[in-house]
Image (cartoon, rainbow, N blue to C red; front, side, top):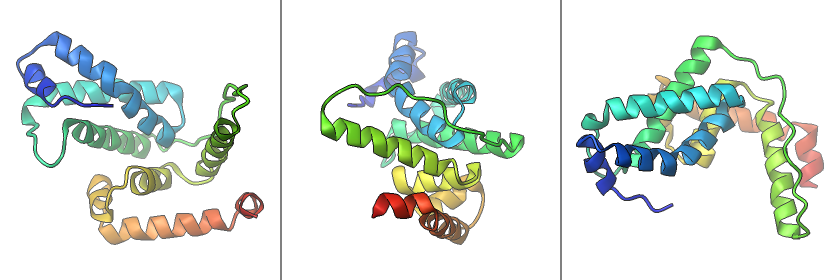
Length: 179
């Protein structure tokens, strides 16, 4: 994805085409991040819409700098997702069946298998833990940034990551998969 920062100026000026282009370009990225945390398509779609509405309403507060617009809107998405999970204290029951890849390409099959395995593992931890692990491992946020998002100290983030990784390493599936 190649982000064009000049779109932000157009959005600030009220250009509807720029808003649509921004949504089309960034919504798959934002949706994936939200869905991997909340694991519910309906909630992920609602949170995606809420994220873009909030971002477009606050577009004038965005100033470019070391953090580009996609990172800024992702932070809004994570905050919305965290607040939603905290408010609703959701319990995830299971993962949906995903379409099987019929490709004979071995590397694609391995990636699919790893994705399913990781998805199943992430379901074994709470939503809050999943959010923190996702932010730290996938999004590569620092513990300080995560602490700010969840309104806790950086050491809270460190302890959650450490505790979750320890919990996941102890699972028999990990031991069977790794060896």
